[in-house]
Picture 1 (cartoon, helix red, strand yellow):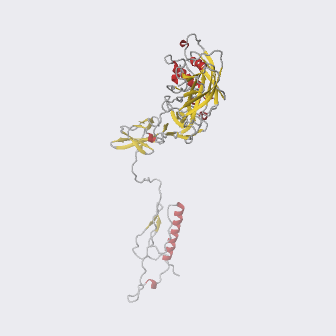
Picture 2 (cartoon, rainbow, N blue to C red):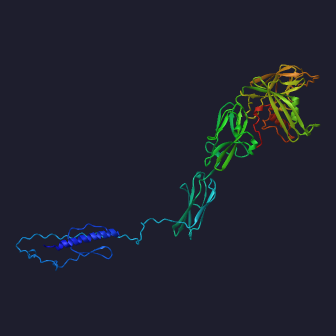
Picture 3 (spheres, rainbow, N blue to C red):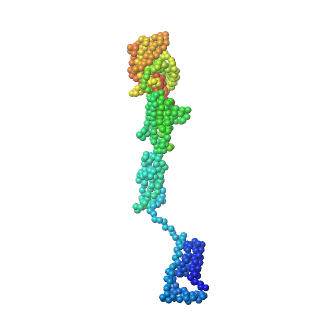
Length: 548
């Protein structure tokens, strides 16, 4: 039986391949390949390095039979005759070369891809000196940059460039934004390092502004108040506005500063008249009130830790006049009251201290009467006065006495109508009596201040009519009899008397003084009259309960 060397070699090749696959799988350094069925023409060995080496040197002659192999059949190896057909020889096919495996190594350095070079971080630091608030000056302070240094600066507000100087003055437009400064060091024209620093969001102190955004200074200083005007019985609205960063929060506040305990149980809202309110969310002051007066309060705008307060005077003026209100007072008692406001040196034989009382009657436009009883005390350093009111009553004066009369126009709510030019609530009145013997004339002391005196020689009920403009009011006066009556000579015809000048502008505040101006006693007396007695419009007294 013949044995084929090619079959043996094929078997040896397959075995060698299987061994290599197992070896590479175990060592993890090779990739297994499929064994070729084509008979190899060269031997395969394993190199010392662990890779497969292939000997491709061709054999110079045909294989010799092995010494151990049996004799070969001559007919199998004889050369066929030239004229005999010869089968074409099979083309020689080489086994495909095994792919060279890639052996990873940990010693080979990795090369990073090429990129644009960046400026290195600075060796030093940058700080910003200054307060990050509108109007403040900020300064970039670099430190520790690599020498030699050529530094440049770039400021941004929320990323938008705003300056290239070392210092920067914060603008109003920066409010709420973060400012950043970047310092770059350049050497030989090449930027080599840079560092940045930034602020907290820029703050802006609150400022009161008008609708157009223009700042309002009225009421933010001690010099004056912001005046808001309204008319009695008519609805009004005023909006308080403030700008700042963070966004300001508005609140109603006390007009007078000081210890909170000084206000007692009063809240800031109590400073407003009934029917008027303030909305802190919108800053709107609105409403309506029937009482004409001055109302003082304040509004505070708070932005972060900063505040600004605006003092406000709400001036409610009277509506259109609908009638005349008359005021009457016994002259003798009132002159004693007026004297209490002067230094004692003005009156011979007077004592240093004065005290007393008097009564006034307010005859309203509808004919009803309100009686006021006044008590006062005074000395050379000051004084005090108080009064109470009672509905009803009748003007009363002793026989031979004098009743002082004044008056003012009033609106439908009883508020005194003030002259827009002079600020004077007193009207120019004329007086008539139903008793022909009554003496009507401007008062010898207070006539220049708008008071008309009526002296009554006879005891009885007298009917007086006080008129001004197109309005008038009438009322009865009870004249009580006395033992002896001295009738003064009339300085003007009995009947209708038109007084001369008007009273000075109304004083503001309660009765309080530190002595009189010796050059103008009448002015001081009228200051007491208007502030305390209420003879020319008690409702217009300023509602200020304490000192600022």
